[in-house]
Amino acid sequence: MSSKSNIYTKMGDNGETGLVGGTRVSKADARIDLYGEVDELNSWIGIAITNIDDKFFKEEIDYLKKVQCYLFDLGSNLACEKEQREKFKLPKLSDQVIEGLEKRIDGLDGECPKLTNFILPGGSKAAACLHLCRTVCRKIERKMIQFRVHHEEELPVHAAPFMNRLSDFFFVLARYVNVKSNVEEVPWKPQV
Figure (cartoon, rainbow, N blue to C red):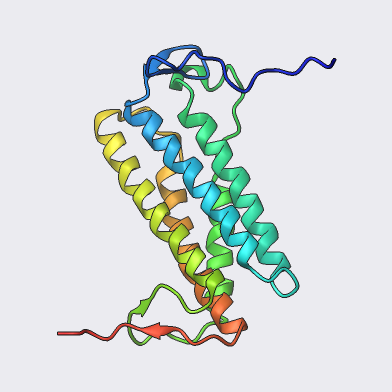
């Protein structure tokens, strides 16, 4: 019989969880909520990937998988006490990551027609999934800013700018996928 580690530890049964450095905190803590939201976004990206045609969008799918890794990097830093991050040599977001996002945004946007009005999330199923990623990303950004108000030094470097660019990336990628799939975007038409 092979020995396998248990998925469950029972350590969180009383509503607490451990940070990377060992500090026990309430599962209601804003930090836990924040990295839980990052994990949720990562899962939504996984769903988006499964809905994007891998024959036509391989490069974009490969980059989305890289984004998933960046989100794991960010989550690991959020799950660690600030003073312990160096000790555990956690991977950090860098200026180059943000610049890479900006280059991708510019490249994808250059392939899309100019926006003349607001559009509704949707078009293709893949684009709708990417719009969902965008809105979850914006929610995380708002929570990061709120977290920073109460824990000024705790937010990892580049975290907020990364989330801001990432939401723009999802918006442009959703448009790009629709354009390259010959799916019309749905313009917003006020109903009143």
